Length: 468
Image (cartoon, rainbow, N blue to C red):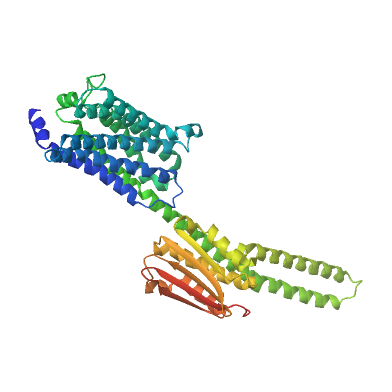
């Protein structure tokens, strides 16, 4: 055991660097992940865990750089650096506690008032620190050590426990779907790691002349196990980083599921339109023809003939069938089939699931000046909807702009994104062929071009008044 004590003592600086780096990477990994459009409560809370990682990593690195700077700075400046370091520690624990509170609030409405608890505890700790610095005659280093101990007791221990509980409860409530089994397991591992860190980082503190810091501290821990708590904290941090990074896959899976839902809805709508056309052009016409034939036979039959009554019943039944089939056709048509162009475009962009994945901007100019035929508007809306669906599936864009304007008797519509661009292979897809066919049906043209500095632009130009 003496060997290990000497080994860890000689490599203390390396351990500090690794410990700080682990938590700093945790913060970067979380903050780098885009969660703006996620519907999960976890997405709105993870930023606090990222803040904890960054601040905690910087605090640990302070144990490396402050002793180096102490050789060149005055005692006053060194004391200021130590105060800044311990304040950074307290802030990191407050952020961790805030993360836990934000995770629990949506699940337990009665806990809404706890949202200010981390800030109040941080202010309480800071007030105590300032008061002790005014009334005590201890050196700055001892005051900072005492403040370090109380930061861990007041903020670190409850913060890690509440964060562990909040992450566990959110995982159990929101990630019950089997499709999320892997990220759910990762978050459960992170929850258990945070609970372990509550002991390692919240209760095992620097030695101080009061209970329990005079009994349970870093020195007694090292003497008992032969290794400083820094080693186990680093391992806990590493497990936390790996589990959180793996759990962040949930946001990519969430986006994939939304895109899949959009594709399924589009396939269903296309099938409804196909059935609607077949009913209108096939079944209704056949029944209508049968009705005409029955009416022709009825005119040749005497009114008092028993056959006349049967033919009247047949004609009535055929007319009723035509009414039912036409009603089915109306029900199968999309909701935008009878809407105006402006209303349809706004409704399409507002209700599109793409709005939950990217920033969607709509710009409509001069469209209220004239009435655009609803039948033509349905084709325009179908083209825009297909363009938005293609962006969701392929573009990996962050911003999308839909604009439409009336100019020189033309309707000009553009859908622009800042994604990964357009590939030639994509041009052979059924969706793009369908868009071009609709554009030709409207007497116009569809162009797809690169948008500088990056992305794709779909341009539709059709006559405003040309009939179908």
